[in-house]
Image (tube, rainbow, N blue to C red; front, top):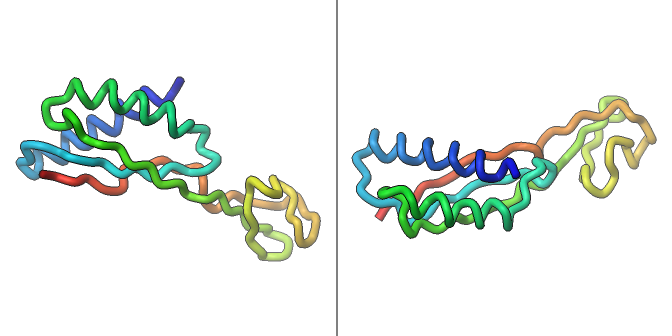
Amino acid sequence: MHELGIVFYAIDLVEEVGRENRLTSVSGVTMSVGEVSGVIPSYLSDCWRWAADRSGLLRGAKLMIEQIDAVTVCNACGKTYPTVEHGRTCPYCGSGETVLLRGDEIEVKEIEAC
């Protein structure tokens, strides 16, 4: 379960931002999670609740998760398409010369301070 490691990293990042900005409490954190990142949102939420409540700054803070849809571009025809629906083969020209544009990232998007 790599979700716990992701949560630890996010909490460290939020605590660092909190120190830099002299925050005393954080009420919420929004994370963007790519559709093909391998992260299971429900696991991420469970890990967050467990770990955030151990941080003075983040105790009680809510985690909001926004999904980033996976999109692939075909280098042969230049068109983009939904990755999950079509995989690595371009649905327009049948080429396998494709590259994932987005959808595998994980990032802290927003921190809400109270």
